[in-house]
Image 1 (spheres, rainbow, N blue to C red):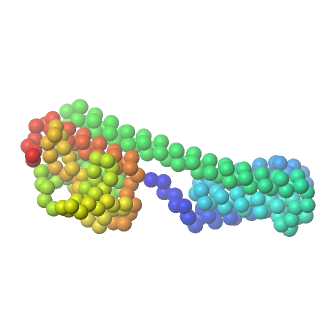
Image 2: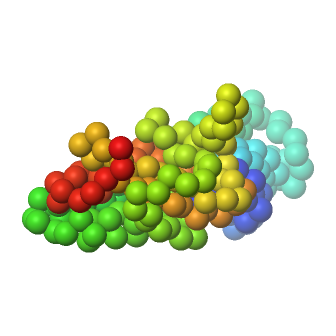
Length: 250
């Protein structure tokens, strides 16, 4: 969902290098700018790295900013030593504030991602409901849901199978979990298996078929919210099939 990884090398490199470059660029102006203004510039750099990188990159940027602020912008220049108590306090505050705002920036980005994802999920559900209400054929609703499942769950492919219950497949359940039940043995998955996974479709209490999901093996399962939306989409397909009065199993 996020596309960001905790140890993204590019983000970590930016967290290490960006504060150095900015602190070095401020050297010609260090006699003109106040220590507070210089520190604020470094905080902005930390926020920028955290906003476009990761929490680890933001923390690294805060540490790097404090170190290079000390080296380039506090006396004695060019050494990791501070003689002035006020400047020492500024460095400490820069580090603390940098760590706090980097964490906040990452959290804001994640919340934005969640809002975008939730909006996309709502659009999918609303569109499938609209198709059913406007008299779209059940086949059209099933096809729409099939396409949505591919993008929603990050699948290689997906097909709908009417009626059949042949075979033992891992099943995406109504609680958003992925389970395989064979006799008394129950297996729960934290990542996609290397076989097709079924998402059963019911309407009016009747079983009509199943979506057979073709995942990318070894990939982590999508967030629970996405799995629950997938279940809701399958339920809407079931409602469309039941409303059309198609034959069912059981």
